[in-house]
Image 1 (cartoon, helix red, strand yellow):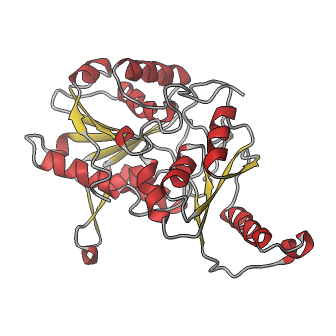
Image 2 (cartoon, one colour; image 1 turned 120 degrees about the horizontal axis):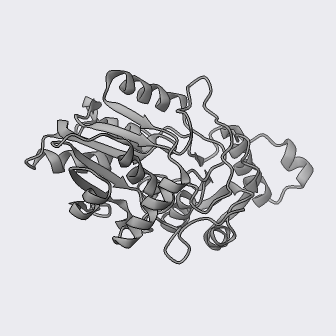
Image 3 (cartoon, one colour; image 1 turned 60 degrees about the horizontal axis):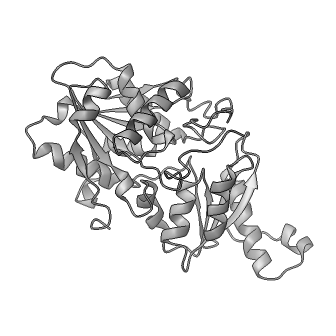
Length: 327
């Protein structure tokens, strides 16, 4: 898998001036096969016979494109999802639309998988509804609130390796990412050891998660007020925030220790400005990726500081259809 995902990490002096950072590096995940960091997570499910995925579009498209044979993909999307994205997903997967203004549980996603399996067996609906399949039925649940300890570990390894072999001390580096479901940020905080028996170790750079939501959700209240999809530049496309208690605990601990920070309340105007500037400079990024760059404007930088932004890519939200339309 390493050979597939050796995405570039380069210094961008032009973007450093635009985003007001002394030095700026970009880890460009748009170079992955379907143009998004989600490809790294998708390939971890190639051995499953069925995958049920809660998605905005990119995760589900990556799964369906990279592991759809022989794996069967069921993508669960919001009922307000943009028509172009919906059509693209339907071409490569089974799509189930739900009202995601309220949280959907893992049990509900698993029920969708069970229903598909029983219907494939040709059982009558009354029997299908009553049938309880074993918990070890061979399919996986993929969701924004999942906790995947190694989903994006290679991104962390690449950034660590790059700066360890440069003239820049990793302690001067701040890595900025979209907060999203927290998995990428959490993976950047704890780098997996090359020796499995050694577990994981803390990275030496500071990590920033950037979100348009007004507060960091707490473990006791992990669902935020639904975000209204009324603007094409909405970066957090799931109307309800999903982030696991375990990931929140680790991020909160690092915030207390001073090794992590969450920048909240990035406006749609800031996201739009960052998105448009990135497009002009050849960076393929959807609004939910551009928000990490927008977060740089909120920081006060010292002259020796170095920023590294993980561009999570554009994926299905490509240049022909760069963002979801207002609904």
